[in-house]
Length: 472
Ligand SMILES: Cc1ncc(COP(=O)(O)O)c(C=O)c1O
Image (cartoon, rainbow, N blue to C red):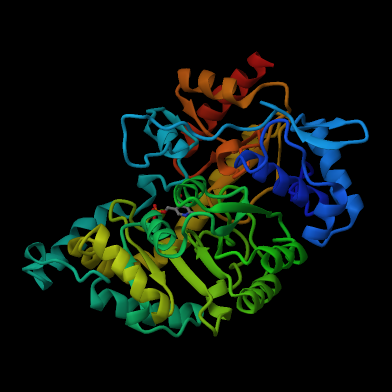
């Protein structure tokens, strides 16, 4: 671990959770400018916390100019304060179309792409791809003339069931599996099926940015749950489940994007119990469990679930075959039947050719052995990034897997300015605020070490750090 470790920077202090909660309600317009906020006593009773906790949260909001105080009267919403503004919609577009911060950043062409949490294509066994493609056409000569079934190719689903039973103790049947075109589609389908306007959804803070956009589009009331290297504040999560009866909790507990944290096994077991007790579904998004640098991560939440409260999303696009865009959803039949219906409205099943190529490529011995090489290559790239940044005076907690460093910058340079100047110099990164349902984390950034080769990493980071210094 590094000396500038930030293991507890996402503190689980209760007053910070109350702070987030109040801020989210103001942001959603439930409490308007100059409106009086609930008294400390009322809020403490509502949230089952001590009055001092609410007092501290209000004081912090006051310090951040989100609320103001009138003597002997109470706390009021500060107009325009430091609060983020909801997206404005174009009046010409009749449907609900929404900005997607991350995809906009990805569309910018930059030589030094630290924004892409995706594998460098040179790290895949490209040389052998044509073998798999040829094999597929030899084995299934009509593959181009056929649709997949909506739920996905049966041969692939059966192979995945065997794989997950052997490696992860999942015990699934092919009916409990759906193939999607990437995990992003899976999140979208699940949100469409499960979330309607004003449903409460728990979301990690920070989290995978496009998931925030999806739940926002559904009109969900999002309540953030801080994640740190020890996982979640489970007492607080239980209180939220008790008080708000959330529909679901969307989580990315293994080499979390953007922080790299992994939720420990005991918490996984306990959270599954809580989900059952309070009937809150857990949506477990798991795009990179194989990319570990030290030990294997704990088993997914899904392996602890006997009552059907976990929906498991596994992407194979980030480091197996990005060009095929294959992911899967595993859940029990009572939910699966609706997810399949939603998929049928979206398309007639993931492309069959992609599924067949993926089947023969993923389960080949070559690919399984290749994973070990990938881990080594990415661990080296992570070390290079940490080495190049060590003199910059920034802070991060060294991840034990995944693709990203989640970095706190000194507050002297606004991240927006840094981003626009970086883009001019062909360097891209992800500003932390877009990973935050509350749109704060103003001095945080995500840098991915997975997409550039070792030389490009060094060059790009030198350029980035010197740009940063020139802006100080
Ligand atoms: C947590 C998380 N979920 C989902 C996705 C999207 O995965 P896919 O490329 O399979 O759509 C990503 C990709 O970055 C991710 O990090």
